[in-house]
Image 1 (cartoon, rainbow, N blue to C red):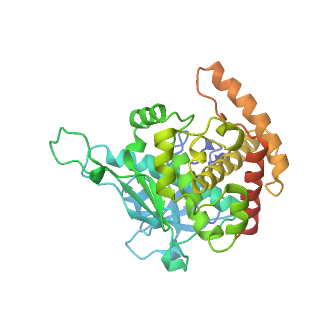
Image 2 (cartoon, one colour; image 1 turned 60 degrees about the vertical axis):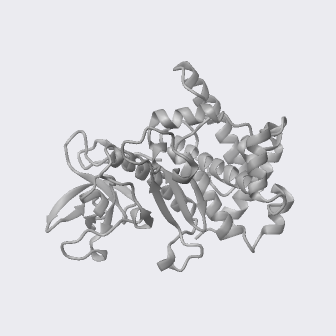
Image 3 (tube, rainbow, N blue to C red; image 1 turned 30 degrees about the vertical axis):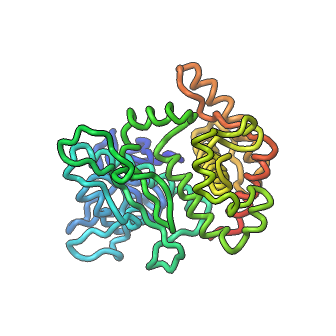
Length: 349
């Protein structure tokens, strides 16, 4: 992720809504593909202040009314007196119950992570869209909380729990993942090196792209590298994983222990890691801590990522934090990353 600049010269970042130097409102301009200072233009309209742009904009409804977004929409796509949804928020099918204390803040954190997902998909030129765009499966998002009766003291049973996952293009995120304490407890309980909101989005979008780019198209190639996704059945593999755990040598063949559960999860974990690599490399190059690298060739990407990862890990250890890059890229993992890379390049929108 690159930093941006306000008209006052102050640095702006991807999630900013206000310039902390001059106090101007800022937002994502779709014409610039950048965070820019916004100049009020009357009637709820704003003008991008970038000298090379000047587009007339309207705030996303979730920016103007809900305060959980920072994106704008070209004014020509809106209607007088109404704010449209931006290119990220338009995919929401279900939002959290805002009558519950804290849910608006949870929703804002979820949306911030989703915007980072959409940014890297656009950076790579990956196709995505909803039913109105003619995509099958259509992409959409559900952000839900566990169903707990008012005043209930008992634990939540399975029928009342929301599971983070993907099905037929619908990505569901349990909003408790937006609570740092709850997420960290799950991370420790499940023995995960990382557990983040953006990580959930990158993993679940991997399942979406399996349906969009692999199913019925490259399944034979997929089987040769990741294994037979039809045998054993997914539910059987899931039960075995949580009963017996991962194989002892999982780190030699998989990017994570969860990836060893089933070929679909191996793909999703590898795809998510590929998005990690791209995101880290782009941020490092713009921040001057890593050389610029093209996303056309995987090998230079892996070499630069390894160098940046070592430096970042040592800095994190200096501060007593977990490693930024805990994963080990073994030859089998590199081969799977190559398959993901090839799939992404061939799907370039």
